[in-house]
Image (cartoon, rainbow, N blue to C red):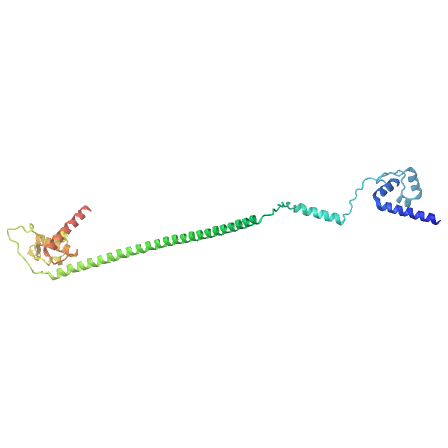
Length: 306
């Protein structure tokens, strides 16, 4: 009995050892020996005996019909419930679809350099840094120089415009001052002429025209002197005159003599006036009259051209 028990124990132990060693093959062999599971079809029709029994049993027995036709199991249409691993894989797939994997890094093999090569590399890096530093300094210096030149050009342009405006103001001021000075001189020269007239008036000085001489041949009255020489009666008082009968006076009226002046005296008076109102000196009488005559002739020529 004990021997049989021990034998059975060894066999069990052997089976356990075999199961632990080759579980998949043992599981497959067991499935081959077992019959296939049978599941009823979804729309299977019951047999005649089943319908008869159900009619005899009544309504209560219709809830559990029996089928005689065996049906092989079909593929399952139910969706298996997701496991945590499945959820994690789906989430990782979604993340991967949105964020593609990084490109693989290409790792270059580093070569061991000799001390001389390392020194040369350091020298090259130092030279590159120095060159870059010098290039930056040159660029900065050129930028500053360009900015300085632009500012200088703008300043020069502004200074030139300012100088042009100042020159324009100076010229206008000089012209205005010259005009004012000229006006003052003209006023002064006119005042000099009036002063000379006041100092040389002789309203009572007379002369007599000879009887055998034509009155209009060498003489001129006040109206003619005003018309042709521009002399007023006040200025004509500086000359001698001759009282004669006015031929235009109607008969029967009170006698009103007409003053006649020598034409030569009127001409000299006009030259003197032109010279004095032009600012010429009165020290030299002959030069004064000569210059007055020249100016008067030029003035009359300009008037004739216009």
